[in-house]
Length: 118
Length: 111
Image (cartoon, rainbow over all chains, first blue to last red; front, top):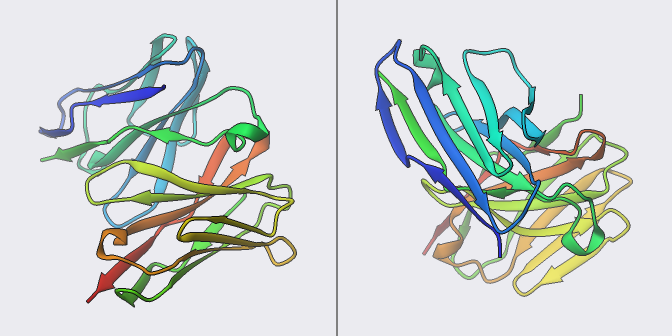
C-alpha cells in the first residue's frame, strides 16, 4: 500500500529565516505531487504541483519554491520567511493515470506541517 | 476559473443526520470528492462519486449529485461526536489533473 510522510509536524521559525519542508511517498512510482497551504480557518490553496522529476508548476506567485529531486520526494523551500507564510502545509500525491476503479485521481494527503513564523 | 462553494458551519445533535452541501461551477466535472479533516491532521478521503451517478451510499454516508444544478451533498446518518471535523468538497479539474477544493464545512456534533 502507499504511504506519504511529511515532516516536521510543527515548526516555529523567525521572520527572514530559511525553510525546508520535506515530503516522501512510498509504495508507488511516478506519482503526481502537490503542496497545499491552509491558512487558519480557511480552505486549501494549491501552491505547487509536479508531474515528474524536476517538473514544477507554480499556482501562485509567492515567497516559496518547490523542488522534486527524486521521483518520490517533494520539497518546499523559502530563502526568507515572511509572517504571512504561517499556516498549515499539506503535501499530497495522486496517481498519474485517471482510472474509474480508483475513483478518478483523488489526492492522498500527509499529516501536515504547522508552520508559525514569528 | 472553476469554483467550489460550501457553507462554513453546521451544528447537529448526536444521533441526528447531518447534511453538508456543496455547489460547483465546472460543467465538465467527472469526479467529485468528500474529504474529512480532523483537528491538526491532514485530509482523509471519505468517498467520491462519478458524474454519471445520482447517488452513492457507503455505510452511514450517502452522496447525492444533482448534475443539472451542480449540487453535491453528503449525508451522515446517526451522526456521532467522532464525526466532528471539517468536511471538504472537491471537484476534479481534469484538464489540469488537480482538485479544486471548497473552503470546508465545520461540523459540530453536540449531545
